Image (tube, rainbow, N blue to C red; front, side):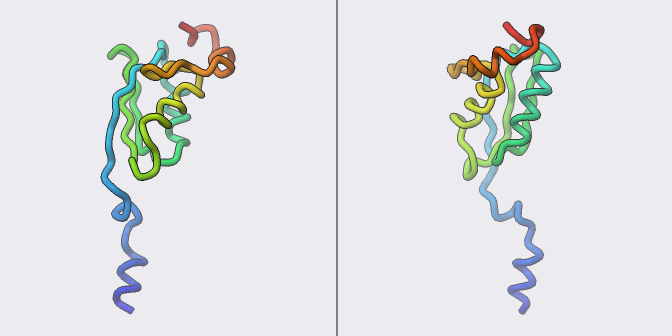
Length: 104
């Protein structure tokens, strides 16, 4: 019974592997871009947090669980949001839906 209780009380976060971080250059240019990208990443399984720094050439730092998502998928989420992510170009259909102030 003690072992069962231990596993029931064990925080699920301890079962996950170590987090990793990656820095990705985006085509974001304003606060609306920042909010849109960070929101979509927050809704993505495996993403623990993200921070887009508009003053640092629009680089975004993403902390993620590599057991649940990889860097290629993170870049795809950004591209599907309508923005370039390093070598991955924005999905045109998503880019076309962005407000004019968010287009490069």
